[in-house]
Length: 292
Ligand SMILES: Nc1ncnc2c1ncn2[C@@H]1O[C@H](COP(=O)(O)OP(=O)(O)OP(=O)(O)O)[C@@H](O)[C@H]1O
Ligand SMILES: [Mg+2]
Image (cartoon, rainbow, N blue to C red):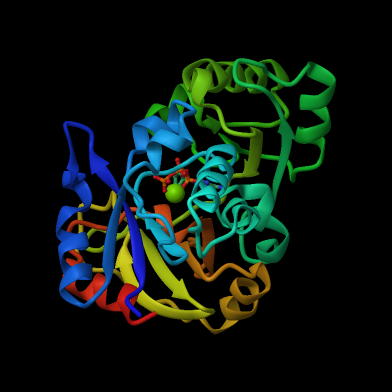
């Protein structure tokens, strides 16, 4: 039986795979994978039924490969597929566990910067008491703010980096700016993470993305934002247990070398929605996927 993959359709041409994933999907098909299209725009607009309208009834449980999906929308996708006699290989709870920091943090606490969080609705900043409770749980010094999934790393000074947790008015100002800029896209709540100093190599990627399938590291690539095509190869033995205890079949871990020489996990992600560095051959990636 071929393995089925749900790819996002091109918003302008719903019969085609979204341009961003087209080469990958072609290679998946060339290796015997079945490619089925869903409408990511419709899903995010809350119309899961329309999103799966092109999925043939009775399609086998499938991998998803595409743009990020908020946890609740992923749940709706799963339910809409079930109504068509189909489904997802990664259950909604598993997706959330890998995709959202509070889902994976406990398993990776030893190998990732100390982190605390507070659930909030989009637009809401935690009240001062709640924010103070968060800062009080972190080691003194600098921190970064993000939501359960994303940071505003491109607005580093104004909405990501917190120079000193002891400067509470400034903490509030940066968190407020972060929440304002995330607007309706804020996912889950506010996360504060102790800042750690990572190496900034001059000739290779500072962050390495490791792709794990069924608890094994299958591919090592530069982080998709890196200008470099080379990635260092950290030892991964100590991460295997953490990845396995997460209980998710397809996971990415982004690793950075702390300036004291220790490899740290910056972030965990669900491999279904992790972006690929431009230098990775779609054929090599498809081989990992279809070989699953
Ligand atoms: N605790 C930390 N200490 C120091 N730098 C950090 C820390 N957390 C994040 N960063 C820096 O900020 C960047 C963005 O953080 P992170 O990867 O968590 O957010 P993101 O928005 O989800 O990014 P992406 O999904 O594009 O990888 C990281 O690549 C890293 O350079
Ligand atoms: Mg990241």
